[in-house]
Image (cartoon, rainbow, N blue to C red; front, side):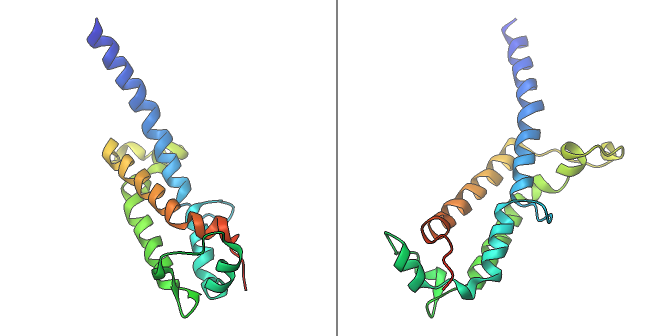
Length: 148
C-alpha cells in the first residue's frame, strides 16, 4: 500500500511541478512585446547601458560598491550585460525549447516532438535565474536605474 501512495504522490508532483516550473522559466526569458520578464529588463538595461553611470548609482545607493566588472569609464558595460543575457538563455534553453507546445498552448503535433525535461534541467534553470536576479538586484533596486 505504501508504494502505491508514493507512486501516486510522485505522479501528482511530476504532472504539476514540471509544467508549472517550465512555464515559470519560459516567462522569465519571454521576449514577447507584451511580456514583463527578466530577459526584457536586461535587454533594456543593455540598450541603455551608456545612460547608467557609476556616479548616479553612487549618489542614490546607500552602498555604492558594485563589482567593477559592471562599469568601465564610469558607464555600465554593455558587453557584460549581453554576456549575462546569453548565459541566461543558454541555461534555460533545455526547458524553454518546447514549453509552448507542451504546456502553454495546445499543439496537436506535440506528441511527435520529444520533450522531457528532467528535475535537474528545471532546477539548473531556476538556479541560473535566481543567480542572475541576485546579480542585478542591487543595480535595479538601489539605483532605480537612475539615468544621468
